[in-house]
Length: 444
Image (cartoon, rainbow, N blue to C red; front, side, top):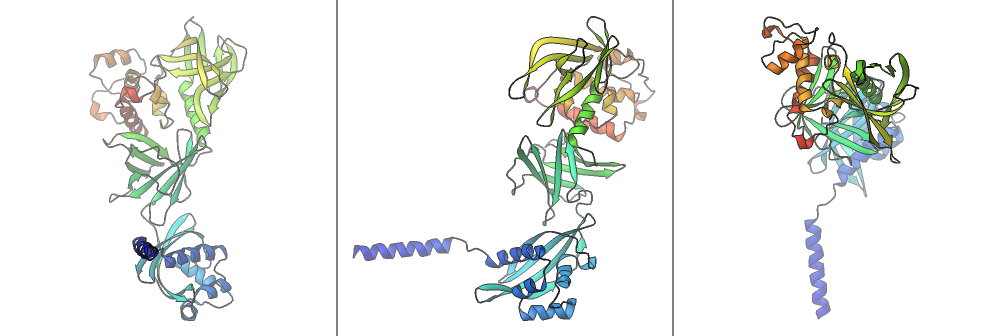
C-alpha cells in the first residue's frame, strides 16, 4: 500500500512539474534552422522540397518563378526582393510567434554595405514528426533607416581599441572589442530622438560593458566627422568613438601620444631638448626612441636606443609646464616601475601654445585623464585662449598674458571654438568633474 501511495504522489509531482515547465517552441526552432541551413546551400531545390509542402511549393512557382531545379527565386524572395539575382549577404533572422503554428519572420541581409529588412509570415504544419512550411505571406523589403551612420561591420576606435558594430535583426546594434584577451561588448538601442541611442549591456555576449556609466549615446555624422559620443547620467561627455577609417587603433593612439610629446624643452641643467615623433635630441645629439606597448595599449613609456644621456626606458608624464621623464624598469610581467631618477623638461616656447594638440585632434586617446585637475583647467582654457577669449580669472589672465601667441579679442561673444575644440572642452570638463578617488594622476 505504501508503494502505491508513493507512486501516486511521484506521478502527480511529475505531472505538475511538466505543467509548470515551459514547452520548447519547436516551430520557432524549425524556422531558425531552416533559414540558417538554407543560407548555406542557397536554398537549392532539394532543400526547399524537403521543408515545404506541395501547397507552398505551388505558391512559389505561381508567384515567384520558382522551379524544382533552382532555389534562386526562393532565396531572392526570402532575402531581398528588390535585389534581382544578387542575393547580398544573409545576416540573421528574428522569429516571433503570432498564433498557433503561425510566425512572423524578419530577414536581414547586406547589400552594398546597406542593411535591408524583409518581413514574411509563415504557417507551419506537422507532417509525420517533421515541421513543414505550408503557407506564406510576404511583406515588402526596405532599407533599415534607424541607424544610417552605423553600418554593419564598421569599425569604431577609442584609446587603443577597435570596436566592430553589428546591426541586429531587432534594429539594436552590438559593439564588440578585445582588450588583453578579454571581450568587451555593449548594445545600442535606438531612442525616440534621431541618431540617439540608449547604451546598455549586450545580453548575448560574454564580455563586460566598459561604458556602464554612459547610458546615452549620440551619433554625429556630418562635416567630415563620424563620431559616437557617450554621455553619463548628468549629460557630461565621457568618451567618443571615432568611426573614420584608420589603419589601426594602436597606430592612431601612438600618433596622438607622439603629438602630445613633441616640442622644444629646456632640461633642469639648462640643456635644450627637442622631442619629435620618434627621436629625442639633447644639446644637438639626436637619438631614436620607440613607444612601448602593453597588450597593444599605450604605456607612456619610450625606449631611447641612441647614445645620449637619455638612453633607456622613460615614462613620460605631461605637466602644466612641460614633461617629466621618469626612468623605469620592466618586470617579468611586462609592467613598468619608476626607479627614482627623473628629468624635468620645461616648455621652451612662449610663441606656441603648450597644449596646441587639444585644438588639433580628438582627445579620445585618454592620455589627458592622467593630468592634475589644475593642469586640466589650464589646458581647457588654452583652447579658448587660442580663439581670443578674454578671461575674468586673475590666474588665467596672468598665465596667458605671458604667452606671445595669446591675442584677446574685444568681445567673448565672437569666440567660436570649432567642432573638434568643443568636443575636447567637453571631454576635459567631464574629467575635471570626476572625484579624485576615481582618477589616476601621473604628474607629481
